[in-house]
Length: 112
Ligand code: AMP
Ligand code: ZN
Figure (tube, rainbow, N blue to C red):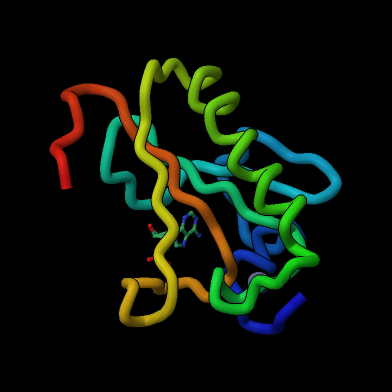
């Protein structure tokens, strides 16, 4: 738990979230400002700042997140989706607790 980290507070239940999944290591909830009809975040419960601070010890956790993405996306009714990890300020990261965005639905997403 990192003090003043909004996602740590969500993990702890101090801030409400629209949760769609939880296990001992991960939580997933809908993004508060969705950029597509379905937009959720997969978040490790342990505070990890970003991909820049991940090490070999996080390999299994990262793999688990990536395998959870399609499972939850299908549960949310998506047939395809985009996943995104913003890393560091230059990468557009605003919340410095590692998370993977998963979003889609509606129109086919534009190529980037
Ligand atoms: P980024 O760090 O740029 O990957 O973006 C952080 C994301 O977290 C943004 O898409 C926000 O809309 C989302 N977000 C921030 N606060 C909350 C919250 N309390 N509940 C759900 N999503 C949030
Ligand atoms: Zn945190």
